Each structure stands twice: as C-alpha cells, then as structure tokens.
Length: 387
Ligand SMILES: Nc1ncnc2c1ncn2[C@@H]1O[C@H](COP(=O)(O)OP(=O)(O)O)[C@@H](O)[C@H]1O
Ligand SMILES: [Mg+2]
Image (tube, rainbow, N blue to C red; front, top):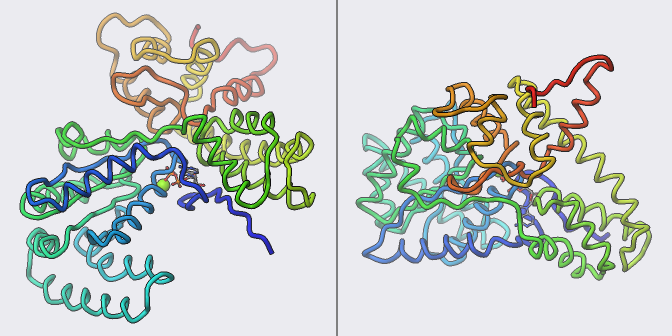
C-alpha cells in the first residue's frame, strides 16, 4: 500500500525540507569553522513560532554532522528534573545509536555505545562537566543541540551558558539553541549579553516558491500532478506556513489516492478544503485558548483590527494599539509585557528587532475577529480598546 509522504506533526521530517538553504548554508559554514584550528564559532539561535520547522532543522543538522563524520552531536531538551550533566551523560549514551540504527551496522553501534559508556563512567566521576566536555570535544568536535530552549529554567540555562562559554574557549564546541520567539526573554535574566553575541537564524514562513516545491515535489514523486491554478490556491491558503503545507499536502495526496487519479483538479481540491479547514479551525482554537488564558483577548482583537487594513505595523504603532491610546515617550511596563506575551505566543512576529511587526505565522487575525463577533452580545458595544 502506498504511504502518504507528507508529515503534518510536530518534529516530523517532511518529504522535502524546502526553502531552508540559507539557514543550512549558515550552519554548514559554522561547522567548517568548527573543524579549523583557528575558528571556534559563536553559539547559534534558531527562533520562530511553533510549526515553522525548528525541530526538523535540528534533525537535519544532526544527520548532516553524523553523515559528514565531522563531529559528535548531543541533542537535548531542557529538563525540570535532571541536571544538565545527567542529561548530557544520557545523551552521550543514546542519541547517535538511535539515529544511526537503521543506517549503520549494529556492530558499529554496540562498539560505539560501549566505548562512550566506558568514557562516561570513567570520566564523569569527580570531574567538572566543563573539563569532561573539553576532553571529549578535543577528541572530536562537539555539537550540542538544545530544542525547546525557551522552556529552560534560569538555573539550568545559566549552567548551560557557562559551560558553553568555558568549553568553546578550550575546544571545538558549538551550541545551537532552538525555541520560540520567547527564547529571548528567557535568556535575558541568564546572561544579558548572550543574545547579542550569537548568530541568529530567524525561522519564519517559507517563500512562495519554496512552499510550491514543498507541496508539488512530493506529489510529483508519487506520480501525481497538480493543475497550476490549484497549486496557486493551495500555496495561498497554506500561508507558506510549514505545518499547513504538510496538512494540505497530506489531504491532497489522500484525495488523489481515493479517486485513483494522477491529477489533482478543482473537484479534488474542494474535497481537501473541508478536511483542511476543520484541522485549521482546531489549530486556531488552541492558539486562541492560549490567548484567553493570558487574558489578552482585547489586545489581540485590537491588533487584529489594525492588521485588517495594513500588512505591517511599526513598534510605535503597536504600542499605541495595545495601550488603546497615544503614547508619547516610554510605554508603560504593562504594554511592553503584553507585546512580549503576544510575541511569545506567536500571535505577532518580527523577523528581526529592527523590522516592523507582521501577523504571526500563520495569521490568526481573521479568526480572532470572527470569534469576537460570536462572543459579542447583540446589544453590547465593541470589545476593542476604543479604536
Ligand atoms: N522546510 C520545510 N518544508 C516543508 N515542511 C516543513 C519544513 N519545515 C518543517 N516542516 C513541517 O512543519 C511541521 C512543523 O515542523 P517542526 O519542526 O515540528 O516545527 P517547530 O519545531 O518549529 O514547531 C512538520 O509537519 C514538518 O514536517
Ligand atoms: Mg519544535
């Protein structure tokens, strides 16, 4: 039986990792630098709203490092219960074996595991984590991947950043942190300057042409073609948001298989819309619940109304929209906090600090405007902030 190639779901490697060439090249350059005696690269931050492909890019990086046999990779996520040292020891014992299981010989894995285990047991006792990692990285360049980095506690994070700083001074070591835009606020109390001196790779939406490829190439490889008008509707509706691209691709593939057709036309697309809209609705509902839990409905609506008539908003405008009144000098603390929360929820997005704000990826704005209409009692006034 044919297996649907699309992978809608958290951390699922898509059939085509489209449109990330720039990020991949940046990372490849750092890895080259890592292996040179002179250049220890700076730490790397991958940040973007959920569903933009941070986890799968880390997976690609892990495989790339291993295929090239250039470095040892340790993937971890912050833990509430384990110390950084215990987590690294555990990662040393397992991840590379897991990733290579299907591809390498099992004898190689057993030997590798046995060797690492012995090293870990001998070296971890009574030694500082720094000196243990320096020794390890001096044998083979070491890459530490931290996914969901925005969830680190201050204690865990401070230790991680200190270790990274000490190890990279003495051995080839690269730290890559991936997280939502909330990562910045999470890092600030740990080390104020950390954000400034890192290589930052924002993970936003794909370009239209990458979204096109991400949908059409896997279908094409399965012998299914798309009417060009259909493809352009699909790309538009996906908002070039990787998760939506996988959802749409998956429904289109199912529709073609059910109809035993090698061509997706408008009729098949119409079948896929229903399923897609239902899933998208559930996804938006989840996001809206997060907004409600933070008591940000009013502000979210004011922002949604502003974006109904403009594509981008300056920071100054956003502050006034959130405050619901003109702001002449410094904005009040609560306005800054609200903006931070909306950003961390992925409701609004800013590619870099200097750029204007855009609706989050994907845009929830139309959904929020409709929800507000539903919630508003027929005789009440507008919920918005006097705008
Ligand atoms: N470059 C890409 N091209 C196509 N689909 C992608 C791409 N990156 C991610 N995806 C898909 O998007 C979804 C979310 O990816 P994930 O890595 O879990 O995002 P994040 O970690 O940012 O929340 C997955 O279904 C994945 O297959
Ligand atoms: Mg992820």
